[in-house]
Amino acid sequence: MGDDVITIEKILAVPAVTGYYSDDQAAILAGAERDGFDYRGTSVTPGMSAVRQPGHAVSVMLILSDGQVAHGDCASVQYSGVGGRAPAFSAALGVQEVHALETTLLGERVDRFQRLESIAVSALGAGHPAVLYGVSQALLHAAALANSRTIAEQVQFEYNLANPLAPVPIFAQSGESPYDNVDKMILREIDVLPHGLINSMDKVGPDAATLLDYVQWVANRVISRRGDDHYNPVLHFDLYGTLGRLRERNLSKVASDLARLKEAAGPFTLQIEGPIDLGSRAAQIDGLSELKVLLRKQGTDVTIVADEWCNSLDDVRAFVRHEAADMIQVKTPDLGSVDAVIKALVICRENGVRAYAGGTCNETDRSAQITTNIAVACGVAQTLAKPGMGVDEGYMIVSNEMGRLLALSAARKLGVTA
Image (cartoon, rainbow, N blue to C red):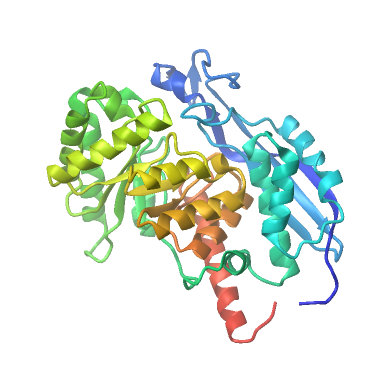
């Protein structure tokens, strides 16, 4: 590491595109009709101009005084404006918010991320969390560059994390091809699958029959295609609250349905994300806590994963404190600052809650790379293959980034410098 102080000389903000789309979840749950890849109907969520619209991003590039360039991307989740989340992100407004940081960040040294991030948080105030998400990624990358470390190494250094850098399980989501994409996941022997995108009532079916059939199909497909029993993925389905909607918030009936899903999953570990959505953080915490008790009483071994209404660092603390979930998806764009992401993942691990470094299909390659470094640094239970819904592209980005950063870290331990 050199003796010269490295500072931020210029900030570039460039409109960019994401790997997927912003969707109006409320309109879809209310019955918006599919029309090819698009939807018919009117948006009902503030900030959405259509039921489905292309995702917006902003690439933030920090030109450093030594000529290096630090890079992060602003992006927001697919289902913005619901579940307590910020509205859909606009690249045009995002560019303005990033450029407003110039008077604050230009000339700042980049040796420590946490100091820079606190400056950015104060300057942005109540701006869109997507902006802080991208800016903080770039600041973390800058600190890593200034100290000749991988991003994962910089995270471990600044947050005093002692766990070894090692591969973490990757979780892929099937999107709107819930059968063909499962075959892709099995071919690649992906650790956690398939998500299923159970975001409408027709995917649950009468008495949850459609959902049960799908879970059983996935389990049987793995067994029939894996060749031998060395490949045992975790089965993870995101229900977007549809099971609670089907049972009109009767948690005893939801618990019974989860027991049936566990049986359908056969020999595989089953994780259910968002079985209910009760409309507020307090209600969601109470409902998931009660659901866990019911499952324990009936002897059902299903991992309950929190997502909706767990959107900030304070939310994560509350869900952990009330033991409301077995696993928490730390949905990275919702938390905004990657400092909050890191702290949320650490809080989960320190309190016996499985940490899932998540995010959304509606991110970019760059935000996926940065959060992969964070996931490895924090030693999470699983991390999301992102962006997109095609499986191969997101898995490639996350898996390759993980391989590179681990190889670089191992080389440096042997005295090799980059």
